[in-house]
Amino acid sequence: MWRVEIACAAGDEDVVLARLLPLELAAADTETPGLVKAWFASREDAEQAGGAIFEEEVQNWNQSWQAEWTAQPVGQRLWLAPPWDDAPAPQGRLKLAMHPGTLFGNGDHPTTLLCLEALERHVTPGCRVADIGCGSGLLQQAAKLLGASKAVGCDLDFAAAQAAPDAFQGSADAIASASIDVVIANIQLGVLERIAPELRRISRGKIVISGLLEDQRIDGATDIHAKDGWISLLLPASF
Ligand SMILES: C[S@@+](CC[C@H](N)C(=O)[O-])C[C@H]1O[C@@H](n2cnc3c(N)ncnc32)[C@H](O)[C@@H]1O
Image (cartoon, rainbow, N blue to C red; front, side, top):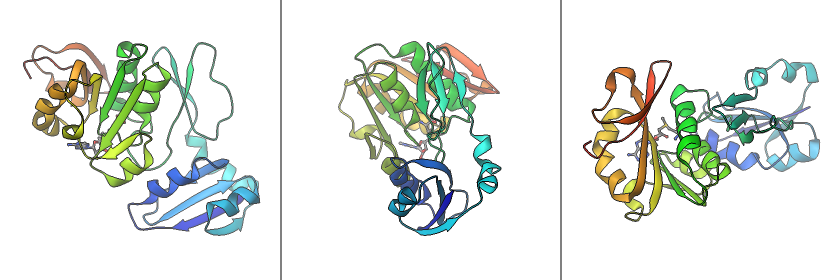
């Protein structure tokens, strides 16, 4: 096994990791600010990654944190797996590759899982989805798998905008009015209160929000689902 260490500016770890994902990545670690560690089975891939290369005993990396990232079912139709997991999804499930970096949206937070489940319920074939605050871009990937014709993401965080496919750095105000069938936003309540008029402006259908605690229920909301103290819901027009 070959370990590559790539130095970068603190905060850019996910940008570096996003560049490596098309290679045959065996595992990655972005926990140290300013350093990305990536493991490859082939020396050729390690060289393409660009960085300092070290040969490692298989047992070392095998026992590493990679064991923590195992495939799991989400909702009724999705199968969330790390990008180095080659096994097919169980029958009837769609395989969704998680982003193992530090960006929000790995699938290990209840609000992300609530959003994935909400997408299962609300995405219809050919619809257009926007994830406001897209993090790793996981929700966009899921929307496409579930049949959306377009799934755009935006995030104020530069690293997220770089890592997520079809994403831009910015917020809902840069999206055309009445252009999105399913708007989804997993953001804390204070921010949602500020951007709610923009979410409504771009929506021509449903607005799903998560990132709320159980005691932050919104009057008139429907399709309320809870997980580990967090909730997702459909935003009522009155909010
Ligand atoms: C909790 S994460 C959600 C990531 C992903 N959508 C998910 O559900 O796992 C919230 C993201 O929203 C971004 N964010 C916060 N305020 C925002 C705003 N006003 N417009 C766009 N993105 C915003 C943050 O940078 C962060 O990446």
